Length: 438
Image 1 (tube, rainbow, N blue to C red):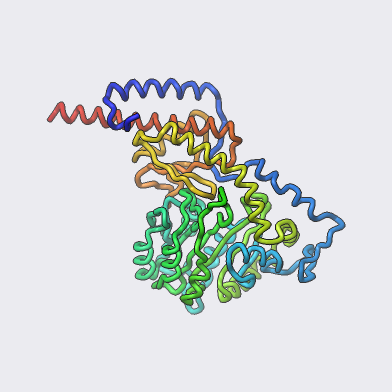
Image 2: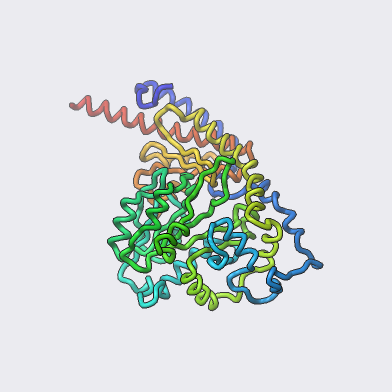
């Protein structure tokens, strides 16, 4: 079919009526479907239920260094757990801190500590600076933006491209404005577009010359092993690149097993330079005596090493790759060639990013909700929840079962068509008025 913009007013009116009839049929189904968050489905969570059996009342609760995991201590985590994540992240075990179950909590804590205590000796805490700014590549992760806004930090939107953030803009702002203290990054399979930063982008990050000595890159490598196939994307190791240039203090790396083992009961880690780790451990000592070492031991015994994690992730891919493929097939069937939407086709991660025509995203999400399908709020992928063009929608295919996902995806496409046709029809009517009074 030709692009909808070429249809006449009468053709658009007829199409609008047909789409409304289909929408009414969906409304009558009383659907209650959820594509709002990137959550694993129950079948994914079932994959490692046998992890719960790896420790019992007769098991040794000692770590590899003899530490009794039932007791206090080991602030930065078990040696074997640190080694496991060091392998996955491409850092040294001494550069790893193992936390609780949430990498988001680790990120929050790092911003919070930076607000109250100096990140670099001799400098002011961020909270005592006249102004603090964070760069926010967008579309991006809404929870990153929420943390930043919570602390009253000014957010500056940086456009995203398939190779990563606009590095010309990043370099200009970071290298010339000392109030710029940080940047959020999801470098592999970015949320929501599924982009992986190019080698050049990573090298340019490592080569930044910040005007602020306490500038930090928050490198949220949440999807470091979340490939959908054997031909996943490769991400250059930022820590190695920073070490080549002596800039390793500039980066904090975060990850977790939230989408590897159990979302609410996994383990989270951060990696940083030796200087940063020493400082962070001192600050952490006022917050906790140590995180859940039994859970660390359980994960370490279950996965053993990086290869064990990667083998497990193939099981996840076998479940969710067909879901991504089905969504793409439905989007192609109903939206391709009509000039009303474009979307990404990621090789991993948890999301598909779709752009509608400008000014349509909020109406699409609202129509979906009225018919029983909950989507991520339009605008959530931008700082302050405001998409300047009102066009980006994040699609999360992983949580619903296949049959529900199919129904939700088809309804979503119908809503995109409805809103697009209404917009084009309004434009045609306006054109007629202009011609009439010209």
